[in-house]
Length: 93
Length: 93
Length: 150
Length: 150
Image 1: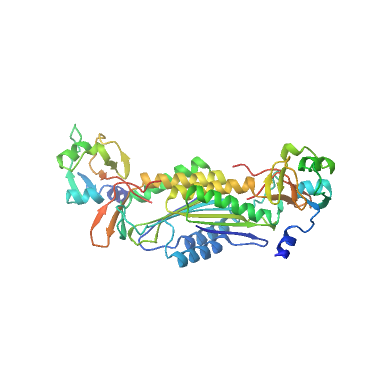
Image 2: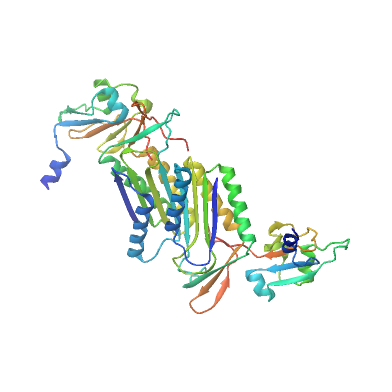
């Protein structure tokens, strides 16, 4: 099942970062790859990446974090291959 | 507008009494006319008619009264030409 | 406010009636409500005592039932400030699976639409003169003395 | 429990989808739910600031939105013990009057059907990754930062 593993981790050493809607527009980009060292003892968190990427506004104010398509805490340590997304306020239905 | 008055009071000197569903079945009749004297000082109430007609069970327990197709109190004095109904518990929808 | 109430002595298809109603609404006002809440109630195949149900008989009080449905609907719709209200109710002999009641509310917001639909359904279950009699497979029957639990 | 969730990138007719869904349900189980509660939400012709609305753009998070809708629906349906659940949601550019969302719940009782329909709608309005952008007649646009009031 090598193909399945490959599908789930398209960029084994990287973290994929996604922005949506107003946040994407403000930041000026929708997607980035961030290099992640699997042997790194101090793993990056979404909060640290938010600051490193100089994303606009206050993360705690209105933005929600998802890791691998599940809502997650902004202080969860990220793994290489993770898909991280910053989600501005939802307005569905 | 004589025709309208006539339609609304088909039996000017009488009170029309209707029973429904289980109550009709228990009493053995669905409709009766009760003579009402328009000059009678002490007018009949639904409660008095319930007793005079020997209707089954306790009026206050579960039966609702309507006069001229509006829910009404069992002690409301009746007028000649009124349509009185005793309604067993409703189970619509 | 658009209000329509019908009693059906034979089967009706809720979604067919609803489609026609929505088309009429759109034709009349050229705008469809932003929020619509519906409820359809159907006859269960099982009687209150757990036995198989052959049919449900729905008796009403001709004249009063129509008036009372209209009073209940107007009161509920005015209270919630909704745009449209459709009530369809069966009378007579209704078979398992057949629709007994349809309530459809159109409003500008989901809150009023949903609350009005829910409250009007409760109102007509408790205050509209309808009486249900269960007919069982063995030919026996019984008048129900209350509503199905909420 | 029968669950079906679809995202539509072009217009859908709620009552047509609903009719097909009910036919499938009846075909599968030969029994229709005794209680069905529905909600349809449509695009208003007016933007949040009162100006005329040209269109609403609905962005989603492909992959997560579907998963999240399924999680929310399963959680809500299990909590209320309902029989069937249909969720249809638009994505992309939606015009005034067009349907954005349809939620249809089938249950054995009216209480669970109505409560589940209501709660699932709130859940997906607040916890499913959809973002609305209003396009106005003058070509300007704005991302909405919240839901329409209840």
